[in-house]
Amino acid sequence: GENVEQHPSTLSVQEGDSAVIKCTYSDSASNYFPWYKQELGKRPQLIIDIRSNVGEKKDQRIAVTLNKTAKHFSLHITETQPEDSAVYFCAASGGAGNQFYFGTGTSLTVIP
Amino acid sequence: DVKVTQSSRYLVKRTGEKVFLECVQDMDHENMFWYRQDPGLGLRLIYFSYDVKMKEKGDIPEGYSVSREKKERFSLILESASTNQTSMYLCASSLDGGSSSYEQYFGPGTRLTVT
Image (cartoon, rainbow over all chains, first blue to last red; front, top):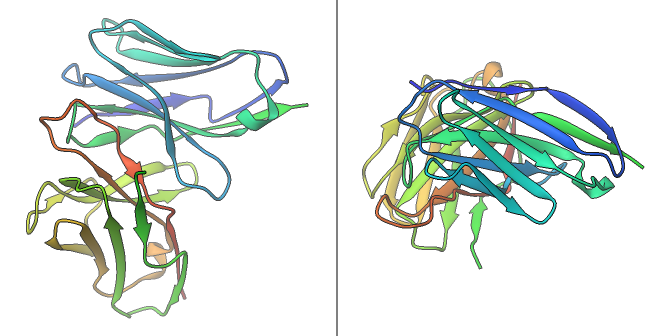
């Protein structure tokens, strides 16, 4: 089956700096890569996703890049703010209706 | 607005009890999932269902079973609760494989403690 590894497990940045979280996957058949944000005590929510036919996707301060050859994808958050503090999970999937394989999460702390 | 609800936010049960966790979605989604979340381990899939009365094992099905009698409801059953099943349980739902949206929508979670 698919194996997703996520690094780092914890990340602290100063407000205004950038944060990068990296994930690798093992199954070349995976074609959908979502990122979820989970604030303390709340449910995970999708913040951005990318499909295998795209190399990069941006949404305001967040972006995701995908390297299919190397089987890795990354989340980039620019101009971090305290409200970006949360746990972030990457996942890999074979597509709609398919099982998601999640990474182990990254706890991001943005220091004001 | 998308909505996934779970029957309890907090639950305390004794070892050996049979435990039912309920999940309901109002989005007419075909797919439903049960995960458990533990620190440092991320979200691990227990069971999922593509349709009413259908179920598939996930990565950690041992000690659990599921029931899906209606499209909107997916139940997770702990046949005989054990202390190592103390965890946060998250339900999720998504549209079927023919849709353009792949997103899974999560419920608020049930924090289960087995003593």
